[in-house]
Amino acid sequence: MSTRVYPAKPIVGVGATVFRNDQVLLIRRGNPPLYGDWSLPGGRVKEGEDLKKALRREVREECSIDIKVGDLIAEFEYIERDEEERVKYHYVVFDFKARYVSGKLVRASDALEVRWVPLEQLKEFDLTDKVREVIEKGYHQ
Image 1 (cartoon, rainbow, N blue to C red):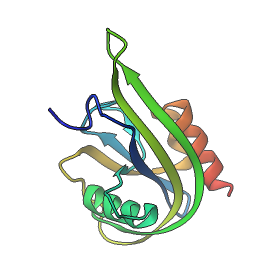
Image 2 (cartoon, helix red, strand yellow):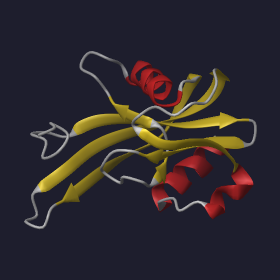
Image 3 (cartoon, rainbow, N blue to C red):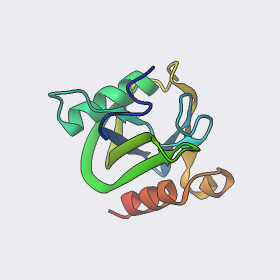
Image 4 (cartoon, helix red, strand yellow):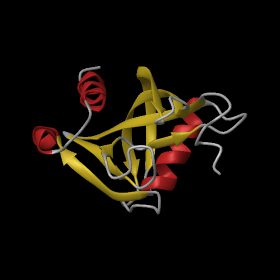
């Protein structure tokens, strides 16, 4: 069983709100939790890795692009419990504003889809309130 499921302790994660002009980068998650949902790219921080380095690595692995990481937008916890109320997933996530630098957008195996989305079209995507809030805050930061 993966150490991400029923973890012994919370897992530190990072997320990127990547802007390119008036577009934001969205991914459709290819792994649980939230499999199939539209979200922001990111992932787990490895031991000994600082948050911004982890974020650059994760976006490169997930989307094949390079980014410049900016300021922290928000931090939040994602906790999901099973039917017996055991903690199935527990992430502490730090979301940063980022700017596209280079590379061709190509999805990796852990994303079902990756896409640049014009900000005015975000309403067409089924995003969580938290993702919408982070994008909005990051855009105006």
